Length: 486
Image 1 (cartoon, rainbow, N blue to C red):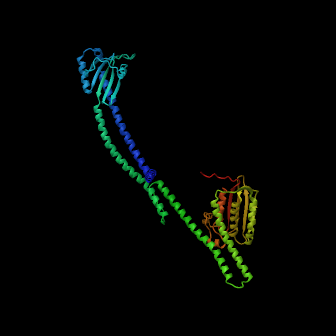
Image 2: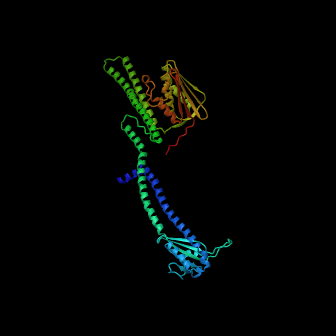
Image 3: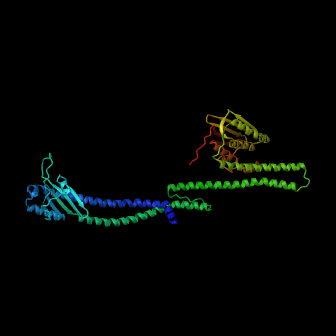
């Protein structure tokens, strides 16, 4: 089983596939070309011999016919000439008349016999027919004997057939020689191609191994960044993306560490305060009622602060877990906003901040009331908390045929320009010391952005330091659930 798994892994290896590809591309064409060359040589030799033999025998046609040789008349001159040609061919020549009877045979063994051979019969119809006997290395050609004529109106009548048998031993020897050379050349080619395949596969995959090692070093605890691999445009692009990813992950990790530190501090501070207050009460005898009440109010405030931090954490976690769960209801958004502002009005009055709502038209939309309320509440509450004495928070609502728009403006301290791109990130806080003073956890805007995105909406921020901040929220009037990818 282990061996089978190893083979399977090798078959999936990019290096193995590159090796196999180079091997196939290098060996298959060479092997095919060598075989085709041998076949072409054999075919060319046969065709050349057939043409040469046909030309030589046709030169004797007129003399064979006029002398009556084709009909059995004796002709020592023609006998001698045919014998010489047969010796030159290392073979045999038979002269066959129109009745398919052998009238002359340079071997002298088949004279007087009748040849009923398909190729001879076809040749009697005027065609030159050849056949290569591969087993005996003989080329047999049937050549029609026709008289010469100047007229092209009709085809000359065939008087007989020359059956010429030629030995092809020379061609067989050449083929054997070529095959020996072919084997040597193929062996050399195979060695070169296999070596090239090994080197190429190693060279092509080496950059990926370096990238993999670089990732392993980083994930294994190395502090340095991934080593850039610029061998190819593709690996260079991968290296750039990997470096950017690792830098982003480092930022995220730093933010998470900062978040843990901040939340730990935020959770610990109220507990410490409550512990000090409780110890103070326990350490005193006959505590006045007024002091007791004052301490209990302080303890209650610290409990509220602790509760706020925990609720923000739970809201964020709940949104992550229920990203695809929306309780959509068609509601009057104006009424929802009025209810939100009514709840926050005591906080605004306590901080002497004017809270104003402006409605340009009635808006009815499909929303998740809980998530939508949480998002807008965070925006308005931030506008109140981070405002100046005697400031204002202005909330307006408008709509068109497709979206409704909510704008939350305040006259507060504003946000530095270099922080605008980060305020929606989890765990990010613009002014950490001031956020702690007023109980900020750095999660409110992250929760708001998640809630808006879950409605398929968008949120933008514009701010001038020392003058105030404006949040623009756009949400579709009709919620369309996006299908999950399979």
